[in-house]
Length: 201
Image (cartoon, helix red, strand yellow):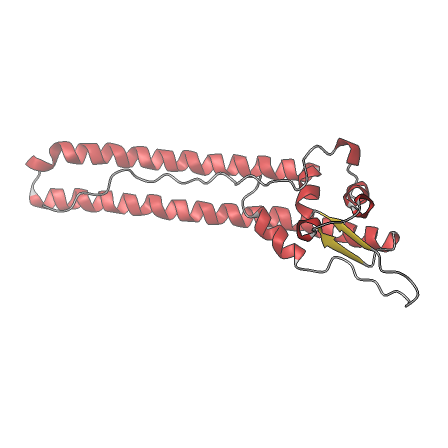
């Protein structure tokens, strides 16, 4: 859904979700969940996706406009290059080069801006999920909670995802995404010029 979500979630999973001291006579109780799946069920995930899509579209439109300008100037150059004065031709080539560099810089800046915006939107939601997991673990006597992506086998009643969703105010019965939920890559506002600035003759 959102670019870098898997990276953010993977980093989050490196942290031990819950570890609560128990006396020696109490058995260890281990639960598991999927942070990415829980994230995809939350209303915030749809809001984040919508906001990122809107921002990405704005960047794409700006890039398309720049690229259309580049194409028009390239065509004009190619049409008149043979009859241009040497100084004029050099100036046109520099203009094309500068415009191409401007497009490439805008591509880089747009992608970096999208990634930063995504992180700023996703991090607070991940923090809420983290707290909910710890609360559920404590309330239900789980010694540890691990990611089900690292789980090879386990009982169905060890999955605390429904309890975490309920703690977050999401109805588990309405959760439709399959576990583990697959994140879709965020749209990249990248438009690469098909032509390069002609070399000076």
